[in-house]
Amino acid sequence: MLVTDMRPLSMVDDEGFKEMIKQFNPDYHDNYLPDRSHFTTLMETKYHATFEKVKETLRGINSFLTLTADVWTSHATEAYLGVSCHFLSEDWTMKTFNLSTMPLEEWHTGANIMTWMEEVLAKFDILPTKIKAVVHDSGSNMVAAMRLLEEKHGWASIGCAGHTLQLIVNTALKETTISRALDAARQLVEHFKRSELASTKLEMKREQMMVEQNALIQDVGTRWNSTFHMIERLLEQRWPLTATLLDPEVTPKGKHYVDLKPEQWELLEELKQGLAPFETVAVYLSGQQYTAISGLPQVVKELTQAVHQSQFETSSGKSFISSAEKGLTERWGSICTISGDNESPVLLAAALDPRYRQLKFLTPEDGIRLQGSIEVLAVKEAKTTGTQDAKLQRANGSGRKSALETLLQSDTDSFSENEGGESEEDRKIQVVINEVRLYFGEASLPEKEDPLRWWSENEERFPTLSKLAKSFLCIPATSTPSEQIFSAAGNICSQKRASLCPRHVEMLTFLAMNKSLMQFGII
Image (cartoon, rainbow, N blue to C red; front, side, top):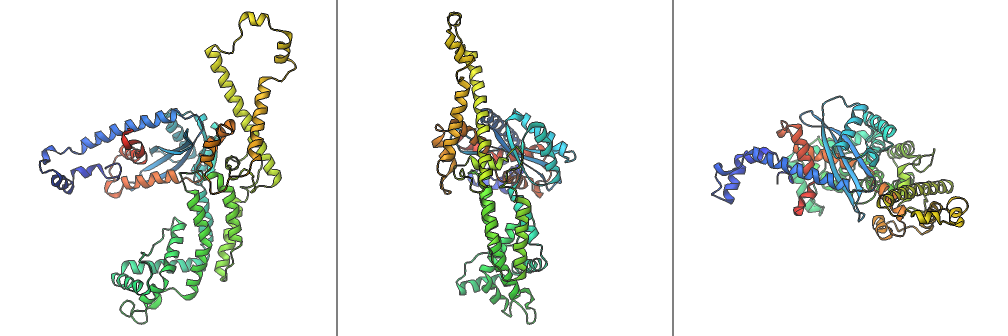
C-alpha cells in the first residue's frame, strides 16, 4: 500500500492509522504494531529485489535500448536526475523501466549530467553501446550533456516533441490581446472557485439549462494544454456562467466586470479551434504503449496543414495562426528533409513503420535516399549477426574442415571460395537487399493498424529488418516517462515529507514506477 499509493513511511506511526488497524483487529494493540523502521527495512528489501529483477531483464535484451532523461527539484530544494529505459520485448510489447531518481549534489553542467548518465548505466551493467538514443528536453545543460554523449558513445540526441509543442504554442499565445483574454478567463474561473455562493448558483443554472455539471478548470502556466482545457470548459459552461453573473445576489449592481467581453468569448472560440489539433498531437505523441516516434514526420506534416487551413475572423486569431505556422517551420521545418550522411532516427523509425513505409512525407529523391540508408543499416546488421554466428560456430568446433578434407580439396572448391565464384557473404548481402526491397515494395499498413503487431506476425519474413525495427520503434516521442517519475517523486517527496532522505526518495520512486514487476508474485 505504501508503494502503490505513494504514502509516507511515517504513516504507520500515525494515530489514525493505528486506530483503523484496531478496528480491523482489536487484538492488534500498539505493542504489536511494527514501527516505521520495520517498514523501512521491508521497503529496502523490496527495492533490492526489484533492482535485481530489472537488471536481470535488461541483461537479456538483445536489441538496443532508449533512454529518457530529465532533472527535477523537490520541495526540499533537492535536485534529482530521472532516467527511464525503453525497449521492445520478444513479443513486440513496449516496455518501460525506471532506472534512477538520482540525487544531485553538484552543479548541473553538461559534463556532470553526462557522468551521472554513465553512472546510472554502470549501476545496471548496461554497456553504452547498447543505447540507441536519449530523449530529453531543450534545457541548455541537458542539450550540452547529450552532445557530449553523442560524441563519446554515438547516442542519438532527440529533443522531446512535447517540449517543442510547448514552445510553439506558448509563443503563439503571447500576443497582447490573447494574453488579456486568457487573464480574464483565469480571473473568471478563480472567481467561481473562491465564491461558494457563485458556485452554488452556477450548479442551479446548469440544471436549468441542462448543461453538464462539469467543474471549471484553472490552467497551469507551464502546460499549454491546461489552457486549452480551461478554454474548452469555459465555452461549454458559457451561458450558465453568464446567467449566474447576471444574478444580483452573485454580482452586485455595477460590478459585472468579472464576465468576459463578447469579443473575448469570440477569441476563445477561435483559440479552441486553433489549439485542438495541437492537443490531439500532444496526446498521441505522449503515448507509451505504442510506437509514437515513427509517426512524428507524418503528424507534423498534417498539423502544419491543419494550422495553415484555419480560417479566423479576429486579428488576434489570425496572429495566433501566423505565429504557430512560423514556430512549426522554425522548429520542425526540416524534420521531413534528409541532410548530411547520418539520417535522423526519427526518419529511420518512420521508414521501419509499415504504416509509413511509402515515405509520402518525403520528396521522391529523399525517399530513395532513406531506403538506401535502411539497406546499408540492414547489411551492417546482417554482417554483425553473421560475425557473431561464425564466432559461435568456431567456439563449438562446427564449420571446420578436417585435415583430410583440406588436403583433398579440389581446384574448383578453392576457386569458388577464394577467387571467382560468389562468396557466402555476397549471397547473404543479396538476401538482405532483396528483403529490404520486398519490404518497401509492399503496400502500407492502414494507419489504424498496430505496427508492432504487424512486425510480430512478419518477423520471420523480414529477419534482418525486424532487428532494426526493434531498435528504432522503441524510441519515445516525448520525455513524458522521465517526467512521470517526478510526478511520483513529487507525491513521495511532498511538503509533509520534505525531510525524507534522498536515498529513500530514490527507492520509493523506483518501486512506485516499477510496481508492475511486483504484481502477481513476480517479485
